[in-house]
Length: 295
Image (cartoon, rainbow, N blue to C red; front, side):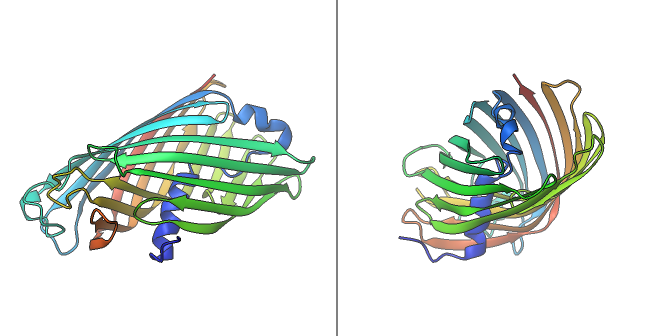
């Protein structure tokens, strides 16, 4: 049964999962190159921010490792929370840090099936677990299906449907996107939908990029959690980003971005998935750097 939880929160959570795979694969003839095996490592820091109405500040360090092989991907993310004034959180009944380390493991598969010279069918499925200590009752999943149309030499459009499920809540929603890409070595490209952003290729192998991406996650807390025993923690935000992407070789991509988090929200749920608390966080900066090696 589809949950009646706020649509915006569910949409952001779903988009945060879906955006890990670019909706736009490029012309059908280029699909094989997009499914190249790869190893992707990224490190991110979200600087200290206040929890509104509470005393403490919180900072988050994230490390992500993702291995992809011809459409199949396995990823692991460790999120480490650093607290100041955690003995007076105000956000929960915790006497001390509500949590310190959260883990996320995801297995996904994605395929592109050319129907004609201008039409491609894309499908994806994923299963994931977000947890503090135990995997039980932490599993979630999702799937999406979309048609991608090559509208012209420079324009692509995509339309379809996606679904996301988790013990805390589930949803069904449309997938819509539009992309422009210059055929020149230098020039602009951009997309609206998933992802949303603009890129300028300064020269071959070097590009400046800006965009807006969702960030979200849901985690099953440990059995004796001071925040919510056997409950759940969910976060969501909208992230603006500006940075550069550099390809010194055909196999290696390096990237660094400055980030700014807005519309940050935390929610606590009990073990049955009922919300028991909500908090807003101040907007604030962050940064991320990563490397992708494609075989």
